[in-house]
Amino acid sequence: MKKEDYMERTLVLVKPDGVERALIGKVIGTFEEAGLKVVAMKMVKVTKEFVGKHYIVDKVWMENMGKKTIASYEAKGLKMNETPLEIGTRVRGYLLEYLSENPVVAIVVEGSDAVSIVIKLAGSTEPRKAEPSTIRGRYSSDSNSLADEQKRAARNVIHISDSKESAEKEIRLWFKESEIFGYKRADEGAMFLQ
Image 1 (tube, rainbow, N blue to C red):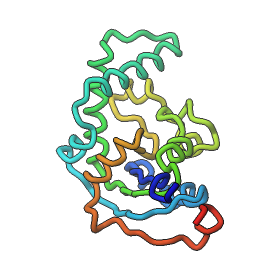
Image 2 (tube, helix red, strand yellow; image 1 turned 120 degrees about the vertical axis):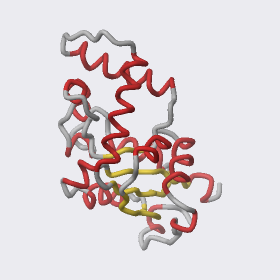
Image 3 (tube, rainbow, N blue to C red; image 1 turned 60 degrees about the vertical axis):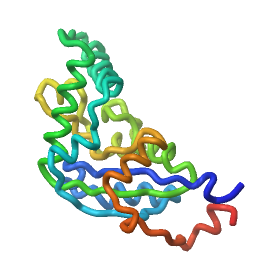
Image 4 (spheres, rainbow, N blue to C red; image 1 turned 135 degrees about the vertical axis):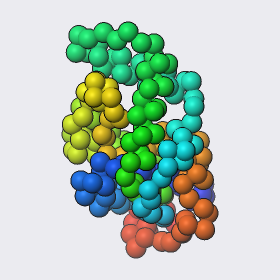
């Protein structure tokens, strides 16, 4: 098996709440401590139109987002009167608004099985359900139901790609190939077979 067969790249966005709370270094450190390496990074202020290309209109994604919100409400004994698609469409709008309000830090992380490792380190998208050792579990205490009640996106510090396919698309959206760099970490010999 060649190194290219198991090395992956994935996208991480430190959202405005993570930037404003000075968590950029802690987020990067979490991935670097796990043996992943940063191969691209930039701080950008994006438009709603750009964020709309990231959170494309995807009926399945919006319905899943709506189902998560409904489940969050039901766990508190509350009921919603909207369909999952209506809720997901509204949440997408909140995300477009939120990610375009203030700068975000876009990062490409590379390593062995990077997509699944980053998902594990990030934790649940709803911070109150995230394990305490994860980024979202340590640095956020928001909930989907509170965010929905306040008509805003949940403040969960980071966005991560949820699959290898999503990672490839999202990286192409946020970075030119010339902005992604290859290099060898000093400890790669101890982490990976050469």
